[in-house]
Image 1 (tube, rainbow, N blue to C red):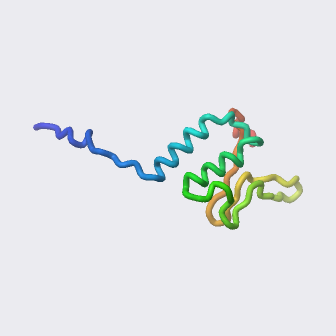
Image 2: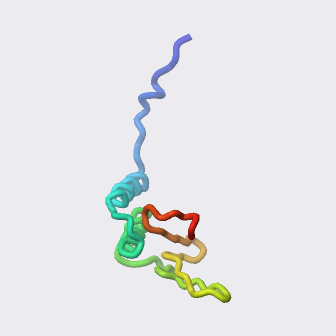
Image 3: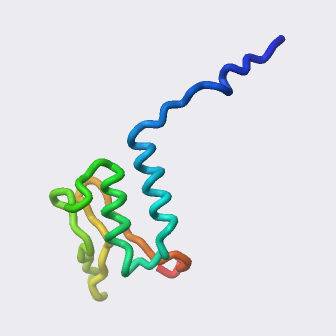
Length: 99
């Protein structure tokens, strides 16, 4: 029985979303990983990869969304887009188990 090697040579077309996400990953890899100074830049690039205007936030979304906990101080989520996503970031190298 012969094995058909044509499957190994299938020409795979990269979609525009895949290309945009690869470009985003390359951009993100070059960042220092400092949450305070790079979070919004990273998020604007991520949104742009998904086709959103790179200069404005999508309607209804916000950076530094206030999250109030009873008896605790107010904390902030890095990005909230109600009904779509919540993003909380930490600087590169921080132990997430402490947060």
